[in-house]
Image (cartoon, rainbow, N blue to C red; front, top):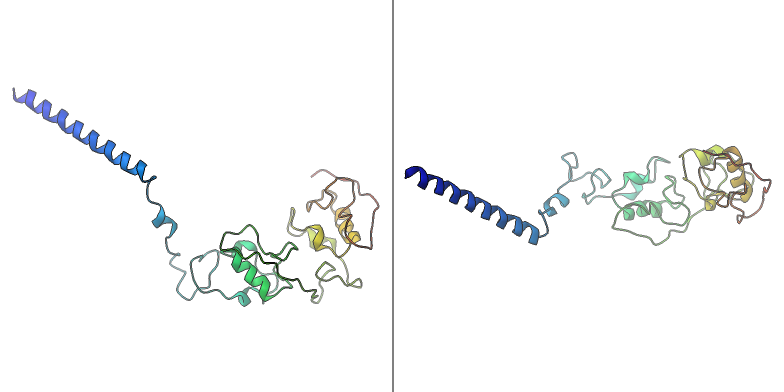
Length: 208
């Protein structure tokens, strides 16, 4: 008789546990799953002390000095910034864009997350010592180095980055695989809408 009552008690306990488990599952489902707010708002890592500038490594720090990113030449890339607005602030601090954050439309690092600042920054034509000829440095007496526009790999520059169509054609001629996609129609002519001087001698395209 005691065995029977013990068996019933075990069954009753299992049933109670099952009911509790189902109830908890229902509550979690109604609330939309586990609470991830704490995870999303977790503080910066331990090396991000209160005085550390805001960056991709310390995205929640309040301190940000755009000038720190604009005085070292081509030293930073979009991945170094926590927000698009921060990258835009750097472009505003130095419109000559030494870090090459702007593809040519006055907006820096469009792919970065919010907060955002997409009000275009007027670009300034400034040439540093040894700078190759480009849209930012369009002086015709400047030397032109096609390799400059191939240094970042695939699709790093667009037609507006060139001072003339002939310069874009020189890059296509140097790299017929066209990693920058300057010859959108595949006819062997790069950026036909750019101003003179022009070079319309067709380049025989090569496959990557």
